[in-house]
Amino acid sequence: MVDPGTVAYQPFMRMKLSVIICCYNEIATIQDVIARTQAVDLGNGWTREIIVVDNFSTDGTRELLQKIDDPEIKVIYHERNMGKGMSIRTGINNITGDYLIIQDADKEYDPAEHPKFCRKVEETGATAVYGSRILGGDVKYEYAHAYLGVRVWTFVTNLLFGSKLTDVGTGTKMVKADVAKSLHLTLTGFNLEFELTNKVLLSGYEIVEVPINYDPRTYAEGKKITIADGFKIIMTMLRDRLKLSPTLKKTVNTAVNNSQTVTN
Image (cartoon, rainbow, N blue to C red; front, side, top):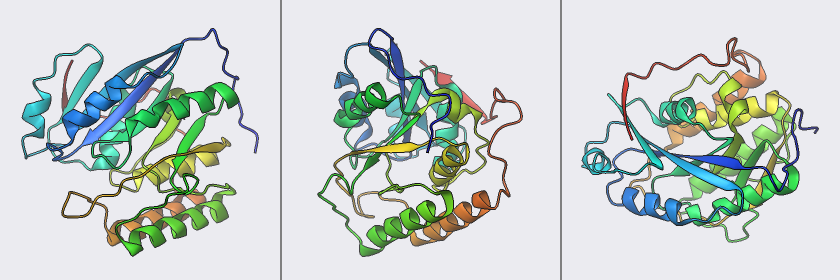
């Protein structure tokens, strides 16, 4: 598939990566994830900003984030719980980078792997780069239904959208910022991440993959996605394939009103 409008990376070009970290009640891990993200050297020519979106945490995460005073980090607070999908949309709406990457606030995915995504952009000029736990070769899941769900979602995505992905359920996704902002994203739950994938593909862009590691957590440790979310994801794929939701915004710069406060 041709990746329209993509310009191959030039070594002298400076690129900015916007890391979107969505969190809800992640007091045990959020500080470490932010620290790990900041510690990563993205490589020559890359700069970074970190956008943390707190989805109305009630376990002390919010108060912890309020203590941050760092020019590289912007913290956005939802005034009510609006879902992970809305947190991602809030992040997209506030980024200033050339590319965005979604980084979970738990420790299932390691920020140290972000340079892999940057190198893939440099090598291919890709519009979207996804981390694949399958290509990583060390597939670890705490629950059989989680593994089977990812396999079903990946099969259906490839069938409906003509892609050749190995892991559509991955949490680490890197997308060119102007493309992400152009998409008509409507959902607020976990299925927003699949709507993002669907509409990237429907726009004619190819998604390339890089192998990543994965350290799954249990529901007792805070895992939130459920079997019910899995059915919503399949319905989202069908909705988008049938074009029941527009792929592109009528006005690219339309802002999402999230009733939020922002601090730097």
